[in-house]
Image (cartoon, rainbow, N blue to C red):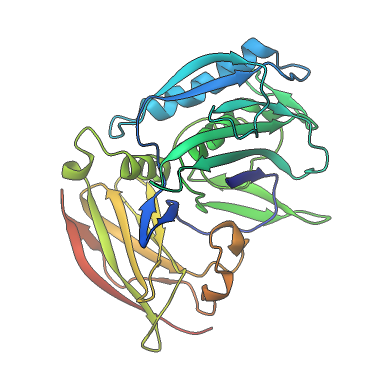
Length: 327
């Protein structure tokens, strides 16, 4: 069983989308659905004020439809019907609904996964929305209520096993915590404030991530990638954020250095010149991205690579060697 949660607001972000892997024998396998459409069921077990069963089904359906509409991704979904089961049971059925969890007062929603240990394929993906908080499905949002469609869009990204992104910006709030100022990824793990509907639209980072997991529609032939290494004092850096910014479109897609050699690869980039930014994950909850927290190097300063990197259509930039400096 795996889990991911969307929290209210706590940490300063960085950049990247992540894919999840699972060990099968001596191999590392990307965690994804083996077959589509992936079926889901809506739980009748609980509703909340302002969100009846029909509204819940509609909001979740719009979220799935937006992911499915990505032209460069092959993933699809199918509504399987209503069920009296609550999300969180290991029953082989993907169930979505409300659960009352006042003990999780900072968690808006959470996605739990059941994985076939023999193949690494997803078997079940349950989503619960925390009924102890106030929710809305109003077209323009409602003050002091969290937007169900925005949170459903994030959690249905987790449903397909697209990992958390840290491509966003926050500021410290008086009295503690942080407020989200903006985000360039629906998969950013910190929610906008109650009343906001800013999280209803997929961003370039999300589209690149889901297309990388389930490529289709010429994704691999029409986009390109940047790859390379990040080192400090000649030694590889693990967990550095590397962000590719397209100055023509304003879009950003990111990745981390994820190997013992400090290697990174950013896929799904539009052909043409890109700006590279490299920064440490020193203002975020590192364990929200990596389980081996101690291996993540955050002792270096933010830099921009000293030249534009041209991304070829259907190809890779070639290895880019980046050296960062200890703080």
